[in-house]
Image (cartoon, rainbow, N blue to C red; front, side):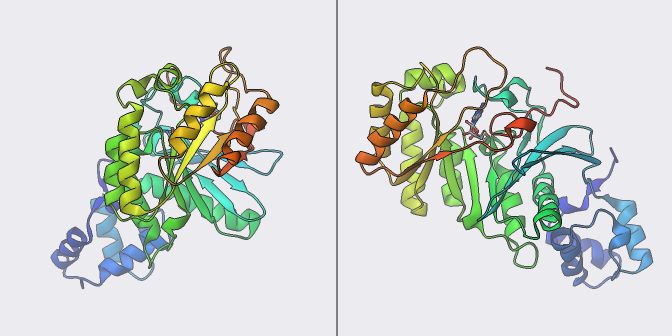
Length: 349
Ligand code: SAH
């Protein structure tokens, strides 16, 4: 790793000071911004509208911590998984999911994860570090290029459903989204961005106040505290009441409905008392339930519930007027589906 700061860590004001010090016009800031956030260059020599000497002094003072190696795996269903080696040799994974209507980029927010959801492979990794906002941005940038190359279309939707808990890397996630939204850059609409959280109440409230205009998905998986604690032990610290209170705040500020993610596990959360509890929570705020197919992660505890149970669950909610869908997993054959991301490079399990 280079002992210099990534130039993207500088605010426009700091960049302006740098250019003034070098007797350059402050408008260089806009040119640099264009190279960094629109063209996504990986070195200073590509900044062709800057003089040689300026490019050299930028290179002497700063670096660009771009991914050093990217490996791809392609699923039989067209899903592509990218293992991205970061400048410090840590790795994260990002997934490109093409469908008729959209191309979704599933991106990571942390190297590993500090949470302990028992059914998620990523939770077996220790959380090594938070991603910098530019590393989150770089995933989108790269996936966009890949999408153009393979599908002749740009990424249309972003989901923070890769490795890590986005609301535990709050500042970088918000900053990355603001960079993705830059009108002079990728100009990505926040309406097409979904942050998926395991349910961190303080983060949800803060996010509501950001005025980002993105969507919120909550990994609920059980509407009963006791069961939720069993499968997501960290949730002891964030009881459902507190979670619901933060979601009420989210809705009161953003007026955006909540997407509850829910895996139905055999024998764990698939009987009538669970579905009743889920329906009760759904009645609190405008929402939609997304049932997720359980993706096996090589354990003996969790099994997907029977199709008939899922149908009953869905019917129960539908009869009560609660919108719900069932999300079929993509990219399972290459371990690219929800909860299967565990890039093993550089990890001590
Ligand atoms: N930490 C965030 C985002 C990453 S996980 C969160 O918890 O929301 C993205 C989604 O995949 C979450 O809903 C998570 O609960 C779900 N998931 C985790 N492991 C899974 C598995 N084995 N099968 C299906 N979905 C899984």
